[in-house]
Amino acid sequence: MTDPSTAYRPRRSVLYMPSSNERALEKAKTLPVDALILDLEDAVAPDAKEAAREKACAAAQSGAYGRRELTIRVNGLGSQWHEADLAAAAAAGPDAIVVPKVGSADEVRGLVAAMEAAGAPERTRLWAMVETPGAVLHAEEIARASDRLACLVLGTNDLYKELGATFVPGRAAIQTSLQLAVLAARAAGVAVLDGVFNDVKDADGFLAEAHQGREMGFDGKTLIHPGQVEPCNEVFAPSAQQVEQARAVIAAFETAQAEGKGVATLDGRLVESLHVDTAQKVLATAGAIATLS
Image (cartoon, rainbow, N blue to C red):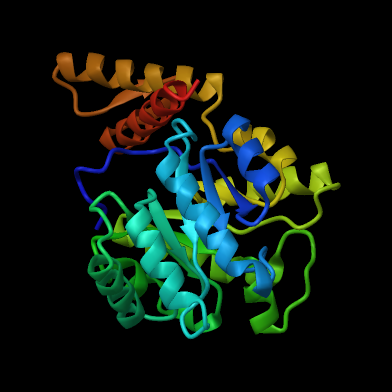
């Protein structure tokens, strides 16, 4: 359901930033991050909510964040701040509005209606956070509910809590949930982001989890610390070897077609059109990332 007029954007690294912290908002302008989530929810104390809302909206309208995709996470449905957050964010026109704990397709449609009523420009998409067992089980319905929905964002901390599960390396307790979310996103044609890694001092643990997310098919990972940005970018970008291999696959297939063959071989392996599609995606991703440098 992705809008065909919306160009592909790398979302390897997506960093939460507390909108109440002016220093953090300023620092974000210099980070090599693909996208920012200016947070009005968990990272902001109740007595700072209104000021944070003003700062996030001002940032979204400032044009000071360059090529970074700029989003605002509002407080959730049913909270005392939600309606004012959503209306202000929609009027500010960020790249997307991130809504926590979206649980159904009906909620998506209601959020989109509220965004449009508040004057959100067409470019402002909806990102829905998947954080509960019910949301996981209805993830495909959520992802298909509106053409305005562009991304599913896993809220893994809340998911652990809702499941009563234990954090362990490898995330055995939530692997099924992660895979279901990726399946739903791919079926609906929207992006999907992995959840955060909580221990900012455990670099090896972060890398292991980022590689796991990449292997599962996530487009990128949400982050809680600037130090996680560069390793995340590296994990979710095609390597030089993968780019070279993709070019070789395409060249081999084109040569085979020119010879009237339907398939090719490369280093002893069969190359079909599906492998070409994968190779073209690798090159497109690498090209899009290169434009960010």
